[in-house]
Length: 423
Image (tube, rainbow, N blue to C red; front, side, top):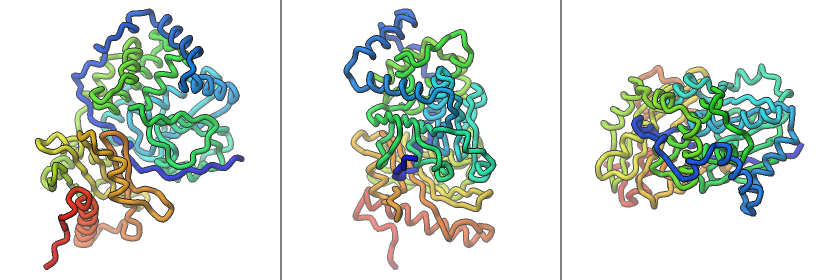
């Protein structure tokens, strides 16, 4: 088997963390001249142009088509990041439907949890076929039945399942994040210039790899999830580029506006509101940066952190918000410092900022990173993790990590500031 070299990716919220979207944003109103043409004519035109076009995407379409043909009748495993967001979930579902045209059976799996209320609503309301695998349950699986791995909206470095899947070759990688080291795959489409992986998968639909049918319920639900993925990764299309608007125009003929509205109308949980309240109370604002620690959170409530960051960045005279906390997995006795960054400053690169702030471990794995306008970090606590029954010890541990995180961030935000005051 050909060896693969996968360098660790920033454990982003990649974010793994969708931005809360505005329920009254009407993506169905996106209109373009091409939309007025019949769907079949539009698909045929796009497909014909793709065949004639010398551009790289035309070549990608044909390469993916040939890859799928070579693996006809196989069984593949689609891996999304541990805390999948609408972009990753919808893109994985789309690949699964495309692969079905070649009699390829696929299963969509993630190693973490669905904790954001919109993600839970998306999966439940659309019956999106994603399944949680843990390191414990994966041991009961017969991995020999899978002939290939498919990495969608990630490059294998944000999934705790990857170490258990090393015996399965990577067949396809489709992602919109920066390339992470030397990635070996039979087919790869990695385009950081694209705002959402859902855009890339929609382009493959337009190119004719799957003809959406508005009379097929599964197609309507998948198109709706893709529209949600586009919106969540582009801040309700406010950060969208031409590719996203063209993708939204295409999807507008198939998606269910009422279903999308129901997904977006999901209320925040009390735990999320509590985290937002703590972030407001604990925030430190310097040089238009808002930094807040929210203390301890349960593993299932991890997505409260990015939602708090989304809230803090809306404050007047704040262009960047960073929220972090210690996330505890009671089942595995594992603790991590997890944080999210949100920014409206176009000149700030979240990926560079967080990598410079937190560096990397001995294996070269960066603790943080991101994409345009958003990022995140994940730092293992290691030996100090667990054993929080003693309240004094838990408080002391939080104070240490809270001070260290602030110190590293403020060193970049305000190099003259010393968060550790000497007596």
